[in-house]
Amino acid sequence: MIQDRPELVKYFASKNPGHLFLFVLPLWYLSVKFISTSDVSSGSILIAFIVGVIYWTFLEYGIHRWVYHTHFKTRILSYFLGSFHLYHHKEVGDRRVYNSGFLMIYLLTPLVVSPFLLITRHIGILSALILGLSIAYFIYECVHFLIHYKKFKSGYMAYIQSFHFHHHDKAPNKNFGNTSHLWDFLLGTYDDRYKIYKMPASSEVSLILVKKV
Ligand SMILES: [Zn+2]
Ligand SMILES: [Zn+2]
Image 1: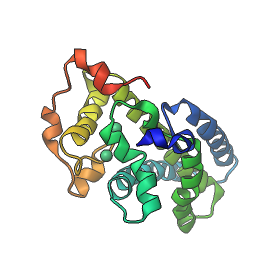
Image 2 (image 1 turned 135 degrees about the vertical axis):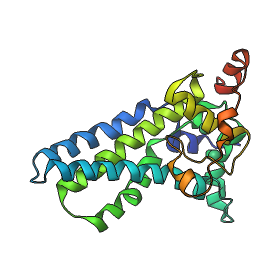
Image 3 (image 1 turned 90 degrees about the horizontal axis):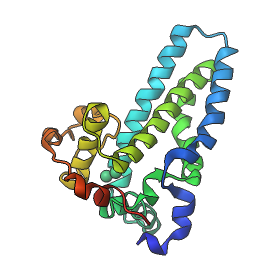
């Protein structure tokens, strides 16, 4: 249990997305700076930005489906992964693992960004790709935090909340997307029963969504 692994929680997870500003703000600043001083057309910048956003939605889906929900035989991997997402499924009210910690981000960033280098080495295009990717990533962290933090009645957040809670409560092998259902739809894991998913009564919500630790 996570109680026995305080060092993992401290460095690899966090209970809100606030600290991520320390990571994304310098990245956004540098990306905008490189974009503004590059000689690339605004159309190319826009396309690269959108590709970065779509790439994140795929990563969000892929990491959740093929990494977090895979029971690896390697001991260290199952120990590590079991401490976060699988634990999150067991103890959905424990907010300590709602978001990534700084070490997780620094470890994963080179892996995640390196495929861009296969597409281009142009600093302006690379910066636009990274800007799109990092903004979409930050939105994901905020969305995951918020849907566990409060109950939404309507709009995009209510839809995302039902989609994710249906995954938690009823169908752990479906609905892996967090900010969209695009890849679930394309890759056969879309379960539309989230539309009839009933959120717990408001008296129970605080217990189910957030448990103070
Ligand atoms: Zn969750
Ligand atoms: Zn899951």
